[in-house]
Amino acid sequence: MTALRLPLPDDEVIRGACTVIRVLRGAGHEAYVVGGAVRDLARGIVPHEYDVATSARPEAVIALFRSTVPVGVRFGVVRVRIRRREYEVATLRAEACYSDGRRPDSVRFTDLREDVARRDFTMNGLAMDPFTGEVTDFVGGIADIEAGVIRAIGDPIARFGEDRLRPLRAVRFAAQTGFAIEGATYLAIREVAPEVARVSAERVRDELAKVLASARPGLGLGLLDDTGLLAGVLPEVAQAGGVSRAIACLDRVAGAIACPDCVAGATACPDRVAGEGEVAAWAALLSAAGAAAADRAMGRLRHPNRTRRAVVEALRTADAIRGLPLADVAAEKRVLRSDGAAPGLSVLDAWLAAGDEDRAPVRHARARLAEWTRDDLFPARLGTGDDAIGAGVPRGPAVASALAALEDEQLRGRIRTREEAVAFLARRARDPGLA
Image (cartoon, rainbow, N blue to C red; front, side, top):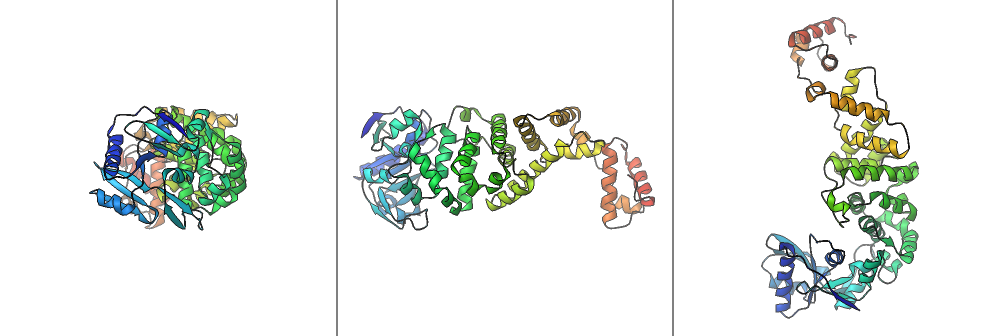
């Protein structure tokens, strides 16, 4: 067993964890900070959350605290609320049989050593006293962190059989930390890779999102491909080919939207891919597959419809930008004012650069966007459906067509006043083919 003391932060998050552990120990129970928080502290990263392991049974934990959420009492897990924060408190346990490849069929409450042995990777198998910083390490996690190695605890095949998501977690940790996956663990991932396709779509999606939010998403995609995981979780990308180019594209897009914490190697960075950045990252990941395949992938992974549509729109807009310049300025403006223009432009630029292709369409688009104002792209509406009908345009689809043609004329700069708009609609009523 390895023992050392880690320097501790002084913040409200760890003070809450100390409160939880103080109460548990005051009632005669063992209690430690465990898992990712200890790993992060050992890497010099301030954790955003702390999990607690204790010898106290769930019913004892519930009785000791005023505000609790019994999220998994059967498995010994309770959430404790301290000063508006929640801390997961789990009873030290061993687990038996994993029929569904996710949860144990039964648990047996036990001691710290046996509890650690059931965890996934050595760097996550650490326990710490939050008052002293003293770490208890039964599995060589500190040595592996210092060596930059991701190693399964015990038999990697057994660990991956307990939870089929763990191979993906190994890749995610590699992308987040830059650590190498240890040889036997890596071979085991390749062996069990087909089984990962049986993991729920939401869990796969969330792990992929964390890869995208990491400091090294391209590394993550490369590992997915090399281990065989990609074929199961993103067959659209695996079958499309060009993964090496997609890796370079993803890294270029990620570099453009990375935040300082990610660059510094933080394990988790929820702000790195948010909003437009999230769309660009997913579009870059799926860039080799194309818009139609991306739509299928996003749907299968059960993304919110808004995100799914945005990613598909970004890829479609990227395809449209690739065709610039266009002879018609109205058509160019419609392309470059679309919701997918900003992420699409980022992805196209990265894709072309990764393939050493001419980036002239990107330069043209950026020059146009620098030249045009918002009013140039979204001119004030000068005519209505009532105006079109009053000018003699037949009711129905012809009205929408006439108004679209009117807006095109505005985008071309040929119509600037309401009078000119009404006159155009009258001409359109007499000649429906008028451009």
